[in-house]
Image 1 (cartoon, helix red, strand yellow):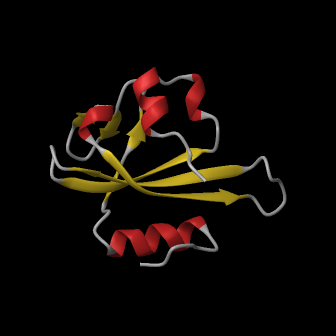
Image 2 (cartoon, one colour):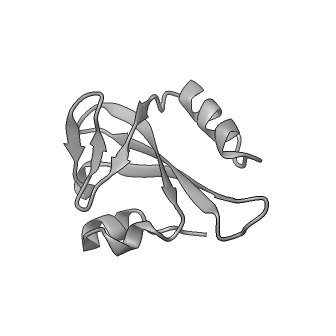
Length: 102
């Protein structure tokens, strides 16, 4: 698997080939897998990799791709979020789990 990608779509395609097949949605106190109707708490998943992407025309138009796995639920998937925006509505555990590390 590559360590960096030029575009968000390239990263998603490559990570899906590596088994990150589910789509996760961010909630205040968990991530949600709608396909399986799972709500996964911060202590039930790991962030395996993070990639940050900036918009071509506007650096404020940035997003982060999280490659996430859960041993508890035996699934791997992807979460895409606007960079820096998630912290406003998340609880402390989720902020700590998803903190962007350079």
